[in-house]
Length: 121
Image 1 (cartoon, rainbow, N blue to C red):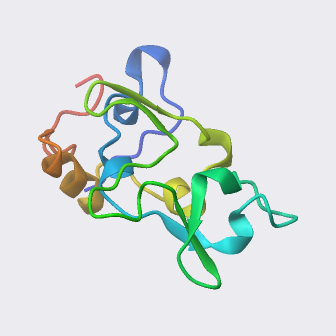
Image 2 (cartoon, rainbow, N blue to C red; image 1 turned 180 degrees about the horizontal axis):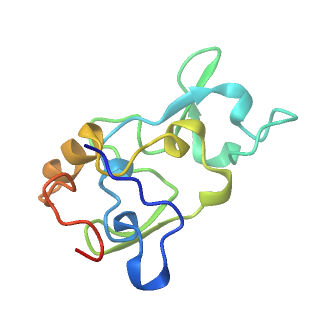
């Protein structure tokens, strides 16, 4: 079962800040209107690439060895999203500890969250 880590207390920080595996495992594609070139978009166009007439992807995630251009830091140690407040919908919808999270963590040699104790346990 996926664990949710909403606004964790400082001593109980989200496992995502030490991970980043999802940002370096999947193509992050979304509808083009999320790009700031669109009047209601917020994702910086400079960090995206077009993938079709109506879709964009985060730069760096479109290749065979993905790593999002907005990801800062070292996977499995300390990471942050450089555009966290304006990140695209696939990133906003990603759930720490779900099957896709665990798949990405395994691909980077990290323990799946589904097998790790929850913070404070």
